[in-house]
Length: 320
Image 1 (cartoon, rainbow, N blue to C red):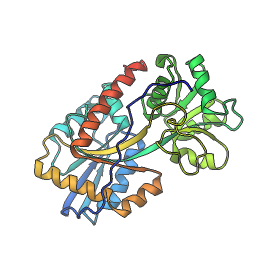
Image 2 (image 1 turned 135 degrees about the vertical axis):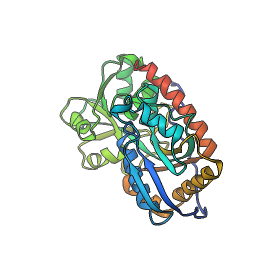
Image 3 (image 1 turned 90 degrees about the horizontal axis):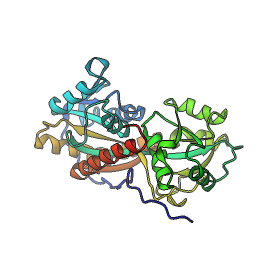
Image 4 (image 1 turned 180 degrees about the horizontal axis):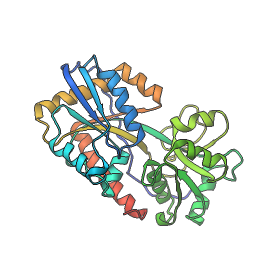
């Protein structure tokens, strides 16, 4: 088999957080979900609210603002949080937010906000229809190498996790990223419909969105982006298929730049307690998320590297 490029973006160091003591209980906590973040960010925030409220905080407020059309497409609102947010405020950040920052759609978070923890990720699956001409990932890979503009691959929003993953996969196969035929469908239902009705022969999507259709036999998986095969998905990993890539759409928490060291430690303790909670594990299982806990300075270093690599990939895709 042809040797392919080793890629780093999205390779996730996994860590546990078991047996940690409960953090101090606080009166109020604010979770901010920027408009630029993906839809999973809001689901994560709601699960965090349900877990924290009444246990580690008397009240948790969920704020979907953090940005807005009146402040330059979110640049001003996000910058205000990073520079002037209150000590008890937390920002939910994710893959899409890094993309928006790299494209100049919002203020950058990596390197400016105080890193707290990466909490979860979602694995991606490459699927096709049961009657597709692509029977295996290798057949798709061969077609992509012959003509990068040939296979039409659907996914989420332009520059979003699926688009990045397709770019990384194509790069690992030696294809020209600027010629890729990518069809953006921000709504997962539209993405699935595009494959089922033949608008696109293939699609990248999250396991949680695609699994019901895979289980029903309406979509056929060709590869998964995880390091090991996924339960209930009869497909090899990208690693097994020769592409040195592990990738997940991650979500985490950061605090404002002015966060005092004592408050930072209290919030790090809270993140560790969340990650070590059986209730959080149940929430992850319920939503199809993988626990990908990485905290403090290690998360900060990873976040800065991820932001840089995201910017480079967007440039390779011709989006910057």
